[in-house]
Structures are given as structure tokens and as C-alpha cells.
Amino acid sequence: MPDITPAELKQRQAAGEHPFIIDVRETWENEEARIEGSQNIPLGTLPQKLDELEDHKEQEIIVHCKGGGRSASAKAYLTQQGFTKVRNLVGGFQAYQQA
Image (tube, rainbow, N blue to C red):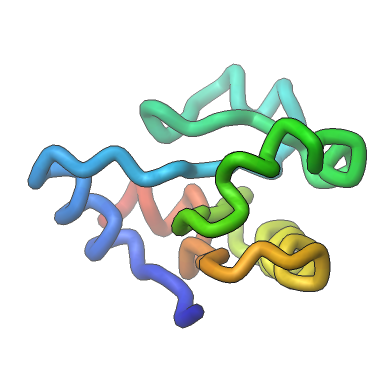
């Protein structure tokens, strides 16, 4: 799936949508600031959390980190595991805050 821009995500949220968002930053980063409604699963723990994500396998999943690098890795990993609708937030949380 194509990645999603911060503007598109904010537009969808403003319209009342609640997409499934995974924040792959470390817990301390998430505690400082976060996208409302996102679930924090640090990238290093993603393999251990696959069972918890099984219900979302066919749903759109938006992954993000600080700048987009870690979430690109998360997107690739989840796609390899059979998740079909994974999108990376372009520019990460930094771009989201500025959008």
C-alpha cells in the first residue's frame, strides 16, 4: 500500500475516522508526545506482539516513528508477515506535528 502523508491522516482524523496506528518509537518517546489513539509497540518488540495484531491483519495499519526510518522497517516486517494494508506515515511524528 502507498504511504500516508501527515495531512491525509489529520484530514481523516478530523472527519471522525479512527485508523489503527502503531507508534514504533521507544516507550519514553511515546510518553513525551503521541498521536491520539495510537498504540505504542517499540520496533524491537514487534515480533513478540504479532499475536496481538492478528485481528488487524486485513485492516489498514498506519505505522510511524520519529522521522520515518524505523516505521519503514516495521512496514516491511509486517508485510513479510502477511499484513496486507500497512502504510508508513511519511516524515514520521515530526512531520505530523508540523502538518
